[in-house]
Image (tube, rainbow, N blue to C red; front, side, top):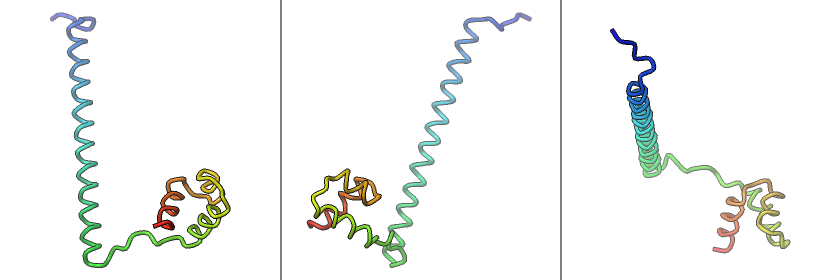
Amino acid sequence: MQDTKGDEFTGRMLGAINSMLMEMMAAIARKDYEQRRDRQAQGIEKAKATGRYQGRPVDADLHKRVTKLLGAGLGIRATARHANCSTTTELRIRDLATA
């Protein structure tokens, strides 16, 4: 029997197989993630249709703080920093107030 420990072909073959297995496992994990997200969205949609899901309640205090800070002339980032929220939340509140 021949020792293949240092064989270049064996090394390349094992490398290719390992790479293929990693890609396959990543694809399976991604598919599982997407299926769980779809099922969750279906469940939320069904619960909303029956009136059992209303989402997160609006933080009225945060809305008041952001509106007040925007009215004082602060910029987006400064408003978010002083109101202790993200700029995305601040923009959402601003857009709701102007709509």
